[in-house]
Length: 501
Image (tube, rainbow, N blue to C red; front, side, top):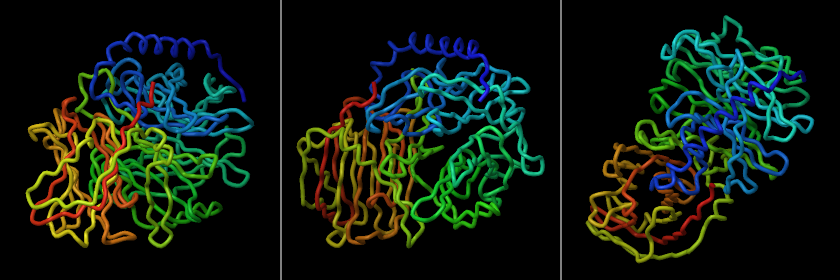
């Protein structure tokens, strides 16, 4: 593969590294900065990119602004891990430096070929002053590394300058995800055409020369105006397409992420699939990407966007914990569970139960509290007659500050409410749950990490993620019930060790 001179690129990386180093000292005292979630050394983080297991380590690249805690000047940050949970920061992998990517190295993916690591990304150009959303030029590019740390951009960039005009415009044409099927490489890219989101597919014999293959997904009018961050993989004998549709108010709002399950005919490029299903029902989850690990598991990591809540901090955004995906063959739904490696971070185990929480009672358990904890709670629904029950987490001693996780029996909904969860956050999200494998048991599995909350319901049938910003002293966990008694079968709690440098 032809390479371009890396002088300009390396200078851009060095400049970004110097900015990061200057800002490091200002971040340490922030009581909301996550301890075990993958997050930037400083400043802005968004989409996960290039998830891959390469030369014995997991690599997580991500959209990163090294110059401030807001979106802009997008580079590719880089982290690696030997075990999927302890993360080490590595040098920036990609920086805007060429005529085709001078306004940002946008999202993409990674593959290994002949021992080298290839990063596929979208080169972004603003064709008028920044701020005009459609005055863009977006093209697909590639960079290559021998060691997985230092990357050289191809002299053939952009390798895909535009989609066919009848399919979409290169004003919104981004986020390539590449994989190999049979003897050919394949790529899916998100594209916008007349306010309609689409996912298009390309094919290549060599990762450089790409031919357009077809459209595999398209908005039906309810799925928004742009399909961002597509990901495509086989799981359980089916083909799964992840996407993050912008403007899909009918399926979760302006920023949501979900998936189709179906079957792709690679020759005709026809993808027959079922309905769109959401991946997360909380406040803050977007742009997930997956990888296959050496054991064959499909691992997902998503971005937890902070939006306006974190303004004024020296960091913005983090990733979810790694989540393992399995496909329920009878329902074509994904089960989404915490990766088993999260157990490596556990310490100080404690447990309680069974016990009953009576109407209007607030029940606390000595020693079960904290800001960085894993909490597993099982309710016996057959022995529960309360109309509402659940937990307050990150609660203050006077009860004024708290995050509410509750089950409403009449509607069958799990609710995540953060009205009193700290400065800058508010609102409520509800998730209607169907009875799972054991309809008499409700399992709530929480991961708290200072400002993040991730809730896995009924062994991964549903997930809710979001930020909270309580005071450092608000560490209480209490159980409550209303309209009757709630029967708690067991509670398990662990402290979670710090895992990111």
